[in-house]
Amino acid sequence: MGKKDKEIRDITDLPGIGPNSAQKLIENGYTSIEAIAVATPHELSQVTGIPLPTAQKIIQAAREALEIRFKTAKELKMERMNVRKITTGSKALDELLGGGIETRTITEFFGEFGSGKTQVCHQLSVNVQLPEDQGGLEAKAVYIDTEGTFRWERIEQMAKGVGLDPDTVMENIYWIRAINSHHQMAIVDQLFDMLKRENIKLVVVDSVTSHFRAEFPGRENLAMRQQLLNRHLHQLGRLAEIYNVAVVITNQVMARPNVFYGDPTTAVGGHVMYHAPGVRIQLKKSRGNKRIARVVDAPHLPEGEAVFAVTEWGIRDAE
Figure 1 (cartoon, one colour):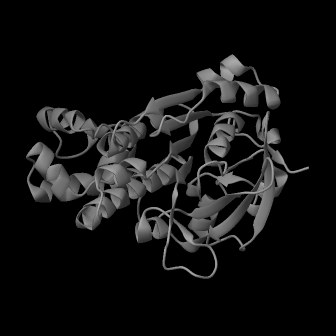
Figure 2: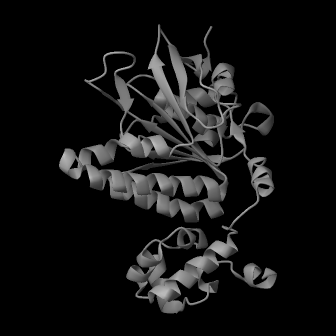
Figure 3: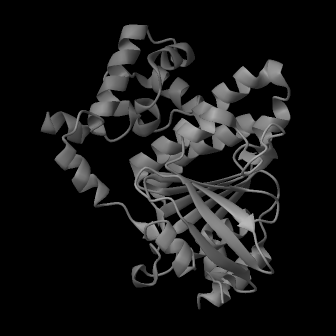
């Protein structure tokens, strides 16, 4: 098994894939072993014309090469020890998150307009580049912008705020505008290949639901929307897991007219969003530049709140 695994370096090494099949797979976005490992046999069979049993064998070989298999709880513990954390810039917010934004996890920030979601994403894109002893990972970031909210001017300010060279920081952030939901998903497909070559440890999607909402309005399109959104979130989850990167997504809130007690707003995306992210944080405006963050759902974190500030230089502790 050892020798066989070592030989599988790219998709052409997988059993059952000839030059023609490899070409078809690459044309359809299956450019890496990772992308094949997480595909379904039906998908693979359809795009390449490979018989279903062969497609199953190819996927199985890809999964074995990546060690996607049963693991003991001890092995799992050892893997979790590899989880790394990125500082948000606020000690209070870091503490709420159990030490910062985790790799191998999807962290969702949701809240109304102006609650600080995009500010946090900008700050993390800068902070991931900090040395490890300052709460960074000395790595690059990818910023998938669906609403045109990315501002290089803000990155420049935040870089100065943490003592990094603004030009170097901006060179280490790969920005892309997602035009629609299918493009958004295709970008993440590309990342499976890109993350193999680049030292990227943060992937931001700001915001994750806006295209899905705009393109599938009304109840009659709800099933299709949720299905696609579910696939997209699984795609992001696999990316986080396979490459040990932090995935941060933002989400808007909508009003729930039937709620009389408590908070009448809820995150967009319905039950699909409740089940996918590893950590869900609600952001709310407070007085002046202060914001309140609340843990809504995280299996390993206690529920709680933290107050932080959005300053000229970025995310900081509230005075």
